[in-house]
Amino acid sequence: MAEKARTFSKGEFIGGIVAALAVGFFIGSMFMELRLGSQPAGQASQAAASAAAPASGQAGADGHDHSAELAHIAELEIATAQKPGDQAQWIELGNLYFDTHQAKKSIAAYEKAVALGTVSPDVWTDLGIMHREAGEAQKAVETFDTALKLDPRHQNALYNKGVVQLHDLKDLAGAAATWEKLLAVNPAAKNPEGRSMRALVDELKKG
View 1 (tube, helix red, strand yellow):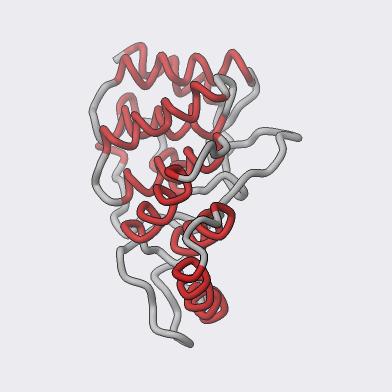
View 2 (cartoon, one colour; view 1 turned 90 degrees about the horizontal axis):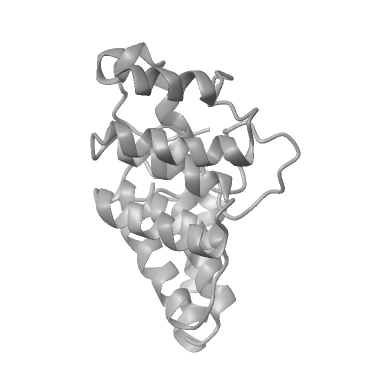
């Protein structure tokens, strides 16, 4: 799974929370690394590490060759221009921009889909991830909240909202409250390194 280019030192975490806590935020709904047991898969895959896509045939910021995705993007850009009312194509294009580390373009594509009608909480969650990756932390939280209005039990939205609250907004109490809601849905939830979310929340509450 891809991590953001900037790494987090332990000193940036309250109570010695492991650095890998941040990784979970960057996972899209399909491949999120928050351990959810048999929870069904969702939308996009990896996180954005930069706003620019790699050239065809070159490894991207995540070390993977995105040539196939970039070729598909080119096709979908033509298709959406020809059929701008096709919501499914906009979502697919947003997902591909997500996977190829193009946050701003992903946001624009998802917003086109949203303008055409109701979308799933998974799409809203992926849009929130892209807002955070674009440096729009408050907008990310608002977008996760939209996902949670549609599905208050959406575990990826809850987890990622807490990450933004903790690391970007420095809202310890807010992050703890959000993750308490996650634990109410899934008491056994763990972070990407397999650490109990209950233990992490308890550390936040200690300050």
